[in-house]
Length: 272
Image 1 (cartoon, rainbow, N blue to C red):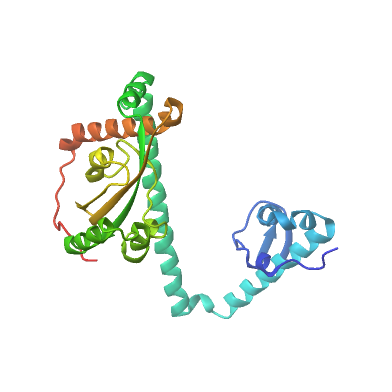
Image 2 (image 1 turned 90 degrees about the vertical axis):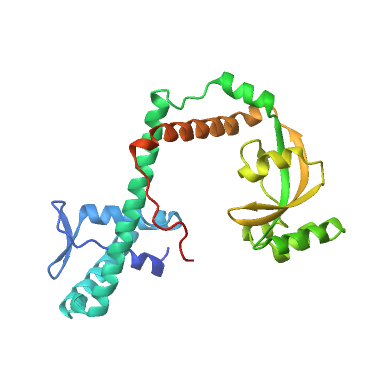
């Protein structure tokens, strides 16, 4: 039988707030309640669940909580909470907590708003719309890209690529897009509408293995190579097309209500 729990369990955060739940232990003025004990027990990693739920394990786990309460009590008596550095870090934690709360709130607002638009039919997408889009745009294209900062750099790469240099090797060495560079410039397959606008028409017109560029976007200057093109089944493309059509409807709806929310831009560009 295990005689100890891993040190990571000793780092569990312990609440100091009193509760109406029965008290199972007291360390000075601090309490460990039944609900607190059960909550912390539920957070134990799965590998140790069986042990901590045994009588010996529960007692050892309580000893860990008692030790943590003892540390908290000693720290409080030592006046640590009045230390300027402690207060500084608490303020930083509060700022981070507020930021995460606002991010979560914004995410939920957007999700619930979009759900309401779906429910009232504003952005509803029908099977007929999806099928018509698929009939017109059934293909998926895969490309490689190299992103550069200047058109001159893109021109030099384009010349080397057309002269036979390995596109994948150049992408790994020179592309500013770290994610695709690690894959030799390889991008996820795209149906019509999924690629960035400047690529969208071009890559579907290009011939297989054709290289094109420079293509200017908000990210910089791109050189692209068409790797493959295949026709997707309706079922294989359905969900992707539905998301595309829904996004188009959201964009149109936003355009229709934009006048209600005046936009003022004070700095067109921000410093890096």
